[in-house]
Structure formats: C-alpha cells, structure tokens
Image 1: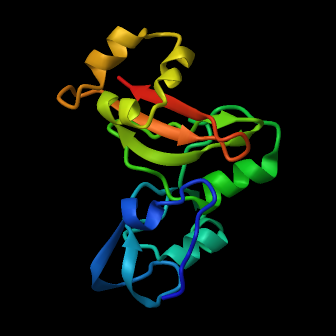
Image 2 (image 1 turned 60 degrees about the vertical axis):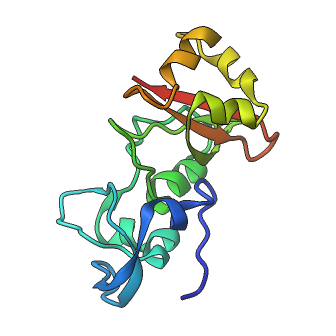
Length: 168
C-alpha cells in the first residue's frame, strides 16, 4: 500500500488505523489490511474505510459524511482548510468528542494524548499558560495519567507552537 499522509494528523496511520485482518473498504470496495473504524458522521452505516478514500475526500463525498464535527473546531477564516480537516482527516479517538485546535489561522496537527510528565519531558510546559480554566498545579493533577481527564496535544503547522486541549 502506498503511504498516505494527513496534513492535520501526521501519525494517523499509527494512531487510529487498524492493521491486520483483510477488510473491504465501504467506499472503494478494495480489500485492505490497514483500515479506519473511527468516527464518521453520516446517515449511512459505515464500518471500514481505507486511508486512500479518506485522504482523497472520496469517502466523505460519496458516503455523504465527515470525520470531524465542524462545530467542534476552533474558528479559522478559510473554508478550504476546514474542508481538508473535516472531509479528509480521520478523527482522533476522544473520551467525549474530538475537538480540533487552530493557530496562525490554520488547524494544528494533532500530536497525541499526553500526560503532565510527557509535557514536562518535551519542555513545553508553556502550553498550560493558554488554558484559561486551569493553572499549572491543576493541570499536573488532571493529567497525572491516573485520572479520567485527558490532554490532547496539537502543534501549529506554521510557527511550531504547541497547544493543549483538556477534555473533562
């Protein structure tokens, strides 16, 4: 299989796709051994999609759906970028509903779920300064790796600034 890349989710194949048993893509009908079973908002029953159908936008168009709820994204001023995100980017798995952060008037790349220790190890503790609801002490407690609360790390595609979303 040729390598498929997602602008706003560079680790998607490793993070949200399943590898193994042969399945049939609900969009193109091809047999695949790497497939997506995550969120897809459509009135049609969809079980499995291949990376190519997602990245090209074919799945969203032909199956009349989207991967990310356009109400659960930061606001930007570019419909083309919004389309790239909601129609051509698989969603990360969230405890509730995935929320996508933006910076520099573009959506950020989703890096992954993080604990406080991982944030510290990456030397990006400044991400807490942006969180209006929490201070550093609260974030340390919330993202201790044992609570139900989850931190989702994003990185700006333009200035490389990290952003953090906490799901409570």
